[in-house]
Each structure stands twice: as C-alpha cells, then as structure tokens.
Length: 128
Image 1 (cartoon, helix red, strand yellow):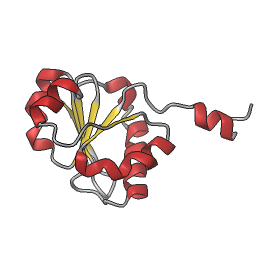
Image 2 (image 1 turned 60 degrees about the horizontal axis):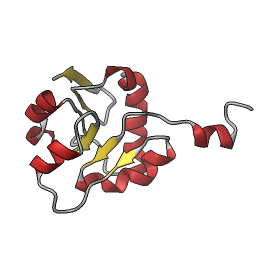
Image 3 (image 1 turned 30 degrees about the vertical axis):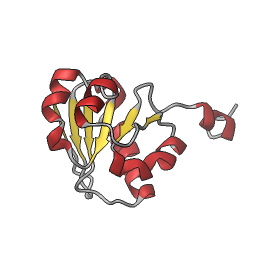
Image 4 (image 1 turned 90 degrees about the vertical axis):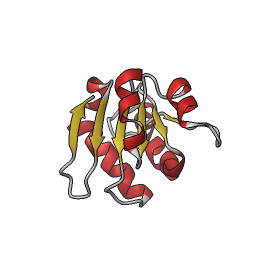
C-alpha cells in the first residue's frame, strides 16, 4: 500500500494522546480529526475544577485561555496548547497545530508542557 493512499491516511493516528478542546475551540474538531488527531470534548456547564480533575490528566488541552490552567497542568499532569495569538480560521489553526505537533515532537514530549502558538510560526514551548 502506498503511503499517500486514502486507506493508509485514514488509519494513521496523529496521536495516542487525545486533545481536549476548550468549549470555545470546538470548531476545530472536524479539521483536527481529519488530520488524524483523537479529539475529546466535554459537556457544557462543566466547571474548570471538574474539567481539570475528570478530563485533562494525561491529555493535551487546546485553549485560548491558558492562564487559568497553567498551575493545574503542572500538578495534574496535562499539557496545554495556547491558541490565543493565532487565527480562529478552523483550517488555518488546525494546520498550525498539526505542523507544531511535528516540529516540536509533541507526541514524545508529553506531559506537562505549554506550547504558545504564534501566527508567524515562532512558537514557544516550555515544560511546566
């Protein structure tokens, strides 16, 4: 089977580490899934504390409001992708996340980092 065959592309998983989308990032779900990411969402009305305890440990949280979660990430063993300084265009943002995933080898880096995305590609990453 060729690398670029449709069957192989569908079976390829970008990550065994699921991405949890913040409620204001749900628009990314179809685009990220099409790139092979496993996406987790959570019920509306869940408090930040419930989210941190029940959905985030061992995962990567995609949010444009990382400030409220940085301390918890270092304590609860989850990572953050900060999207506050990049486009809200679903295709564009999904592509930025996908490229950063490869460039920063996030699959191997997890857990407990924060990746701050920048529109110009000058992303910053640090361990928590």
